[in-house]
Image (cartoon, rainbow, N blue to C red):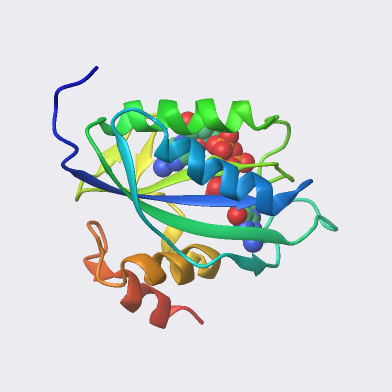
Length: 159
Ligand code: A4P
Ligand code: MG
């Protein structure tokens, strides 16, 4: 077990629009909280949102955001998120297509990461009401390290 203190702050977005959406989002939160080196601090309200992008006719999403304290580095945290998605039956077929559970890493401290596998801040978070509203529930003052604006300011800028 890691002896490192859980001193990194991260925000994770959860989304589901297939099957028992509430059970998937709640299950994702629980699984994250049960992971060694990850402590879920706060959870947003759950919101039903119209699908953005992807194939037409897909169902509404349930979306939420959690704040976590973690000793994992950002890539280790992504590994955990993807393992949880797999556990909940996620099949990667189509970009932006329907999914049982999608877990996206929005922010990790004030890190700016651009690798093939991981981009942080999440590249589309600042355009998306379904991300920014729940993020504002848990951390309205969280700063987007590239844009230099808070979650609240990003939400207010949306059309
Ligand atoms: N990846 C890179 N950076 C990250 C990051 N910060 N967090 C890579 C998570 N993953 C990251 O993701 C594709 C690849 O992105 C991964 O292999 C990972 O290495 P994926 O989850 O397999 O595929 P995806 O979710 O279909 O693609 P993507 O680009 O993550 O889609 P988005 O942007 O997350 O959009 N409408 C509503 N209302 N609510 C939603 O939740 N979600 C989407 C998905 C579209 N429309 C939606 C919603
Ligand atoms: Mg994703």
